[in-house]
Image (cartoon, rainbow over all chains, first blue to last red; front, side, top):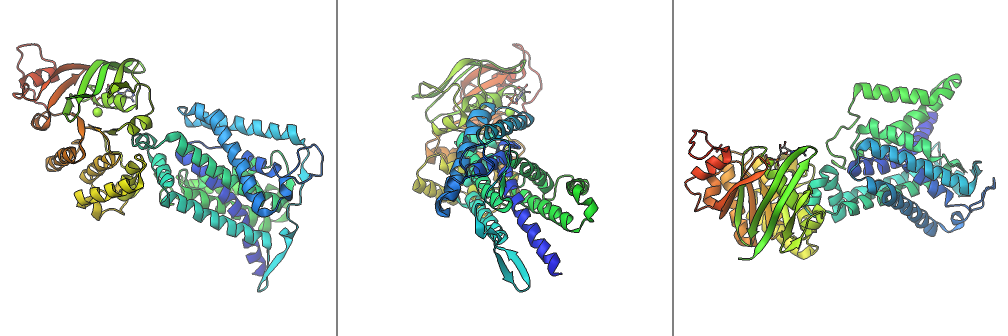
Length: 304
Length: 250
Ligand SMILES: Nc1ncnc2c1ncn2[C@@H]1O[C@H](COP(=O)(O)OP(=O)(O)O)[C@@H](O)[C@H]1O
Ligand SMILES: [Mg+2]
């Protein structure tokens, strides 16, 4: 039983990372109908910004050495700038393009970022030790819970509440929800389309920045393709959750994270190598039962 | 009377289809002007072109003498022109209050916007009762009321309304017109309204344009067109002298 709860905590922690990524992807999808595969590479940018650019195998910390209160906003700011730049350079000229065009453009952006990282930092994965306290554990009764997982859960919770409050309570939040539902009508009422889209990119950049820190601390390594599986799982989470619902994206993220971790823990050892195949089979099963996703919805921001 | 809006020989096409051909019209400060015409005549396209939703390939549109051609809808909205499109377009998942607030954000002054919001709720108690309800759950008439109130929240000088009576019971349509004319007094509005039918229009409009087949067929003051005969032949495209029994839909 204890073992199961232990696994469950692992699962929820991984799920919450996927949920944060899916939330970032979902925000942009809601307003632009863009599935942004470059979102994973925003995370890569945040992670690599921690270290000194060089092709050495052992990474020397750069921003990663700064105190946390400075480090976190700096990384977020860098990722936000990267996200806004991709909007200005690529997605803004494509405002009238269809969804598939936008998605293909996001693949291009993703590829360009990966190769940019490759040129500046070399192709070999690097190990980084961002926070040596990450492995310390907290005892709750008989449970040993890694500190990092508690932090991951707390951060996820805080960010979700923050995004919800932003969308519900602020003027730009309300404008974003309106634009997500009927972009043209919002413009007819004076809502500035590019500003609202810019805010969506910035928000998704903040989320990606935070994920880059959590993920790097957890994995202890960097690679120029580290964001790819994250973006892929987030995409799956968005689809499973019900394309076009933020709550759905978050729920989908948790479902994927929990499924993957539980498969890792309980599949017979011979089959563990095929973990992701089982995970995707599960996804297909979910979609067969509920083709519109777990939480189908007309508007992305419905009941956030 | 000073001219507020001048539409100067605009033409619009969707792919190969020419939806407007050399359409000209003017609206003076304080007027109520109506465009009537059958389905597919180009009425919605005219209003969309004025509001920046579609761009004409020739001609010009001037608001208070200044060309607004090619500007984004949001810029035009901020110049004091507000469009209530056909088919209501409430933000269904936003509450009634949030829908109205969207209109208020444009003017930038929070305290004015709050005062306007209170004023709308006083004017429309039915919306006040439903202020926290998702707008998608309102009845058709209430939604039409909401989108007009929402447009007025932007404090426009010129309000464009596309077929406010579409799909509503006659009694509700009367209320909507009462509301439009009341708001016109209170908020110093100039109105440009599209309709398919002429009976209400003849009562309320100062001037009327008849649009059919992408062209303006007839224009005149409501007094000149009062008997409805000229309107009917322009609307249906009868040759001179032909008197068909066709009726403009009520
Ligand atoms: N978005 C569009 N794409 C292609 N054709 C359109 C579009 N909107 C309207 N049309 C066509 O343009 C013509 C005028 O339409 P519209 O302005 O909606 O007329 P009305 O409002 O008078 O019914 C019609 O033939 C209609 O089919
Ligand atoms: Mg129409």
